[in-house]
Amino acid sequence: MAEALVPPGGVVAVGLRSEAALLPSGTRVVISGGNPARLAALLEALPGDVTAVLSFGIAGGLASSVSTGDLFVATALRSMAGSLPVDAEWRAALVRRTSAASAILAASDTLLASVEAKRALHRATRAAAVDMESGVAARFALARGIPFAALRVVADGPEDVLPQAAAVGLRPDGSPAVLRVLLSLTRRPWELPALIRLGKVSAKAHAALGRAIA
Image 1 (cartoon, helix red, strand yellow):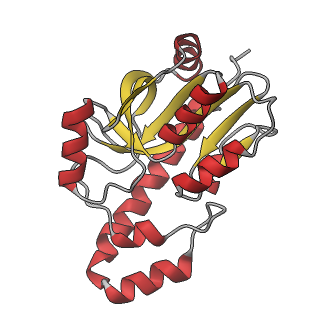
Image 2 (cartoon, rainbow, N blue to C red; image 1 turned 45 degrees about the horizontal axis):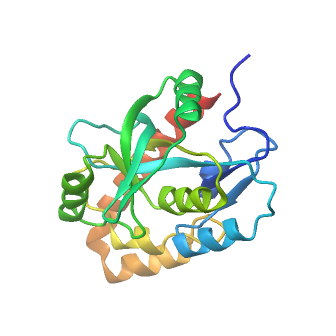
């Protein structure tokens, strides 16, 4: 029998509803909708019975060696502000459960929409990939004195420029905000190819993550 993805009483933090849909039925999950402040509020509102926090979903590649679909379990979580602890025992269990590689991951409270921003964060952290939920989840776990872990799959690569439409493309529940995306594209139509490419790599990353935890 496969090892559990999350310990009993644990919660999973994701950004997208589509990420939550990959999780086993009955998993306790909070969805940020791409808003770190909202995620922090949702986590703080949880009762005191939460035993662990897993950050789960897609990430942006930072290291030149990573590719779409590469799966990582965090050995450490770093940001421009410093490092946050990762539970070593849980990390090892996730590697056994998913066959993911182990790597330093990075946390950011903002969307890294330029190649220059990705390069700067990589230089500062040496991380393989970055996401917007892990930092919030790790700080919550540290404050509660409970284990934290992160399982992330690379979508966009380190040289991919994210369209501005990606920053407005989510509703609070993590579902696509189609009308806002279309409005953004009317103002910046040249971003359409990048948005299509982002959709393709995101779908590939979701598929890889789903296979890993099946």
